[in-house]
Image (cartoon, rainbow, N blue to C red; front, side):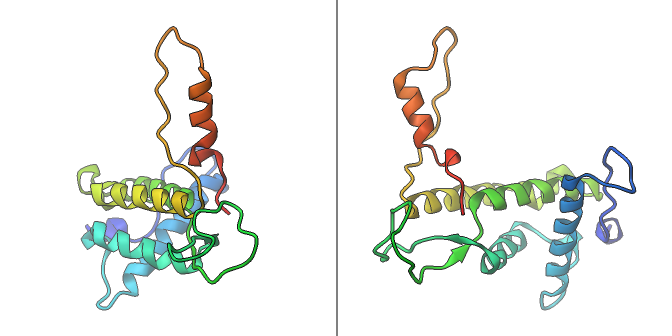
Length: 174
């Protein structure tokens, strides 16, 4: 079973000689995760990894992040555009992590993994991503509110437009 997971043999549309940008990124992400597992002590095979290994990988990636996430004690905590630099850490942006997990989830199944055992699709990963999203939104002063579902027969009300303009998804992470 471990053999099925070794190298990224993705099945995608288009010319195999020129994979799409998404397919190329997915293959790079898959290989990076595989290398992360090999570098563990003791080395671990992809067939034996679980959601805890995925969480370790996501935390490991934070060191390469470019998103300033203010700590609660920082004078700029909650300010979307701080007026001066601070020593708060750089992290991976929530949107980057969310996209990464989506690619790895697909790659896992394309490389022989079962959807039922997919560590990238576990509840622990969804909870972690939700917590990162909320934490980053608070640290940057972006109110996080769920978008209201539109009911049939009603157009956008002023209240709906205000919720959408305040949502974290309209603010790019940088």
